[in-house]
Amino acid sequence: MKVGILKEIKSEENRVAMTPSGVEVMRANGHEVMVEKSAGVGSNFPDEAYVAAGAKIIDKPAEIYKNCEMVMHVKEPQPSEYDMVREGQIVFTYFHFAPDEPLTKAFIKNKSIAIAYETVEGAAGDLPLLTPMSEVAGRMSIQEAAKYLERFYGGRGLIMGGVTGVAPANVVVIGGGVVGTNAALMACGLGAKVSLLDMNLDRLRHLSEVMPKNCFPMMSTPTLLRELVLDADVVIGAVLVAGAKAPKLVTREMLKSMKDGAVIVDVAIDQGGCFETSKATTHKDPVYEIDGVIHYCVANMPGAVPMTSTMALTNATLPYAVQIANKGWKQAALDNHGVKTGINMVKGAVTFKGVADAFDLEY
Ligand code: NAD
Image (cartoon, rainbow, N blue to C red; front, side, top):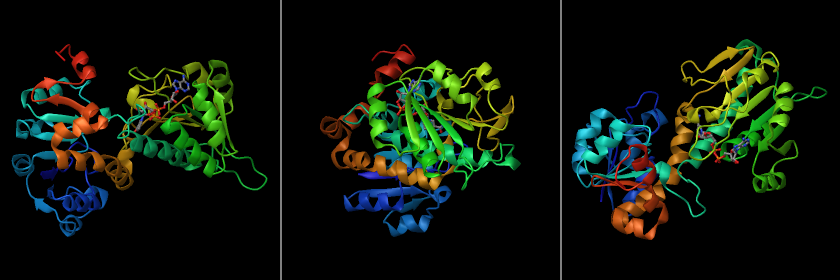
């Protein structure tokens, strides 16, 4: 199969859909790979690395859409690309159709095979192509919190782990899923005292067994949360309620009770955020302050570390991409539950219920 790797054109997006080592694997499986000129530069992968791995560098995206049976992106194709997509062409990327009607209509019209990273399901009902980005955001949340705790960023002037004879920072992580566990692990590694809250008892039992000694997994209740935020230096928002907006767990009243110069990082901001005072920010202007508390609410945190994010994402997407290229989308979907659940559209028909429901379409 001819496989095309397109350059990301969405703003603030520096990831790329395949690393040179992914190209090498594709080539070893007998496929041709065309990579758009400078597609990997934002992630520190120059064109020469792709050429060395056996790819052809192509100047224009139109040429890739014209020649390839499968094209890969990171973000959803942008309006300038809608008409380049061909009938029957496989497009494998993050789509997030449900909140985007123009994109959904364009992909019904172009009759392609749209396979969405975000709906590929693992054997346990997990979402393996979202997990790596949650790992990145969770780990990054503590780096950002540590930075904004510094005095010259407006923080309390604390070091996360304290030093001999000086207590460490108090970190509260709300949500013990992928983001929360990764945040807690990083904070524990720096020596902070970490309270990790979740509502799922089985999850708490597991966390109690595997987390370091300076992490205290606890049942998330409004009373406990109210008590913990009073004394917190850092609060990380990492809850997810499937298919719903994030619940506002930290109210404005609770925020007023927090210490001056404390830092909150609301990773759940892409689902509306779990602090009443959260509003989405960007990498260019990531923080604002309310009631003396620094808010960091960047909706696309992995975008700040494209090299790590690209490698983590392509580690997860490559096995699916190789199967689709080896077998074609139909046979790959029959053999692999993940590919099947990833298919959102087939030649103009919506095949994913969540997307059909979002726009009252036939499914
Ligand atoms: P996850 O499903 O792995 O974990 C969510 C956890 O929240 C679950 O363990 C659940 O039991 C827990 N939870 C639900 N309600 C709770 C409550 N009231 N109190 C405490 N815990 C509660 O999800 P995840 O992958 O960790 O993602 C978390 C959030 O981070 C999502 O909104 C996701 O979209 C977001 N995210 C944002 C970025 C970013 O760049 N900002 C990147 C990746 C993920």
